[in-house]
Length: 169
Ligand SMILES: CC(C)(COP(=O)(O)OP(=O)(O)OC[C@H]1O[C@@H](n2cnc3c(N)ncnc32)[C@H](O)[C@@H]1OP(=O)(O)O)[C@@H](O)C(=O)NCCC(=O)NCCS
Image (cartoon, rainbow, N blue to C red; front, side, top):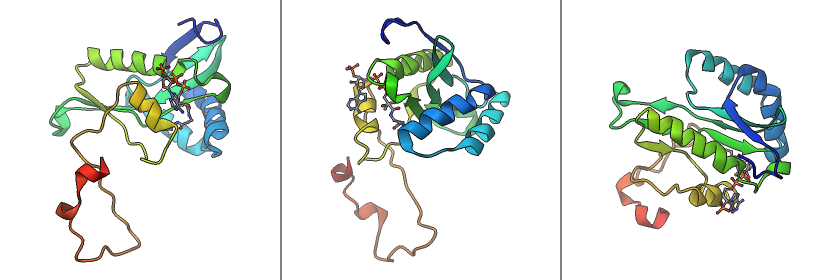
């Protein structure tokens, strides 16, 4: 890929040694520093956990990353499914096609593994991620994500079936 200010962008598999670069990018983007989280997560990669997860580099410097994994029929899922847990690009390199390139590569790897669908969770109020995922072709699926509040009781009258899901979509 040659469109990020004409410098050559290399996409390669994510490695444990990428932790500090990823933590720095995430801190610049989100204002949080998750050293331990990333160390722990990337250690799991040794078991092949984050199949397809990659970083984008320019001249040896990591400027973006995509982290996800794969679930399949062997775990009782109805289809071979891929996940994107997180994707991030250094602010100096955003809007240059880096995340799209990371995703295109990810998609190709998953296609070879016979993945039918790739899932991700995005907040409806996230005006950065939502338009990005929409642009690269993600659409609302026909499953919903449910959450459980561990601290507060749900009013007994509340029923899942009462919700108007079309309104939520
Ligand atoms: C969201 C993010 C990953 C996009 O990365 P990027 O490299 O700038 O995205 P790209 O340049 O590849 O953009 C791909 C398409 O999405 C569009 N897009 C990207 N960010 C957008 C935004 N904030 N609003 C609207 N459209 C956007 C681009 O215009 C482009 O469309 P086009 O190909 O038709 O021109 C990046 O902005 C980022 O890291 N954000 C902060 C971290 C974050 O929120 N990460 C997700 C945590 S899970």
